[in-house]
Image 1 (tube, rainbow, N blue to C red):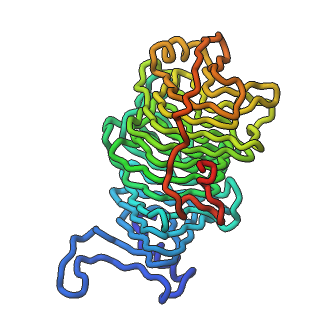
Image 2 (image 1 turned 90 degrees about the vertical axis):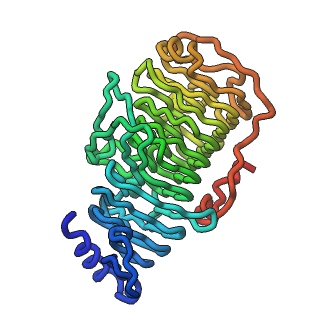
Image 3 (image 1 turned 90 degrees about the horizontal axis):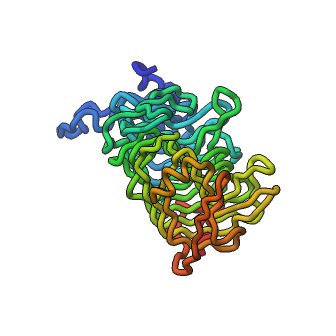
Length: 406
């Protein structure tokens, strides 16, 4: 497949679109007027319509338009996939479609607030496809402190490196809808956006995950940070990480849980006592009053859970709507095990302050699944909801995803 990439695209386009609507342009170094360009800048172009499939081993430019994403599309071999603002991808739902950027690939997807880059499906059903996955070369600490681990996304890729500043590319104003396709085992789902060992040289800004059946965002180790990100209506946790993810420059995270949802944030470090706490400023977690956990009677109804040596320094945290249900108690912060309380909370590597916890049960106290650690807090009315730029990037089918911030 790698050796016949251009043939693959040509055949696909010939079958799916007319020559007048889309063609692939080959950059042979001459732009037609005698001026020589650097070969490899753009090896191929999708010019408004067509199908993206297979393994991409040469640079590709995808212009504004509407496309089909067919199957697992992998970017590798030093290639960069560049996507212009306004591009829309409809994933094929009859197979395990997804976009995967491998360690030796890169993405450059830069939309705008008015013209986001959108990945969706025509059937608009949660779990339709596998979402976007980035692999980097930053350090991880997996179970038993291992510096490498095997991915959980069905691609069976080993991740974990030694370049904290590795760069997997840029994603700005990108929205992923209806992710969470089940992987080969038939029970586990993919996340809407997944980051394996992604490095701090990567840019993640103004992203939306909408109604996926697993986590909105999950970080498996790495050092990347994310700014202005929205998790809306995802079935499992809105934000999740493990393998000692340690991003230091995160800000403006917003989750709106509605219908089905577990924890607002699930935090763990794969049981590694020695880990660097990630830092996030300005977090808003809102749980709609019709929201139930995936499993009835589950404890997964609190705003933020820490377990397995998970750490985090969170400031300016606004939480609303977390109520007791199914015989279980909901908390602003839930500590699941004594080891995390002893090694991380007591060492001030778990900090959630200042916090404004409203319209919720068990105000003023942290929850403890084992020994009651007794940590208390006082609401700070100066903490308000996150402020995000409105626009088409955060609007789905006429629904303003940022309405809960008003």
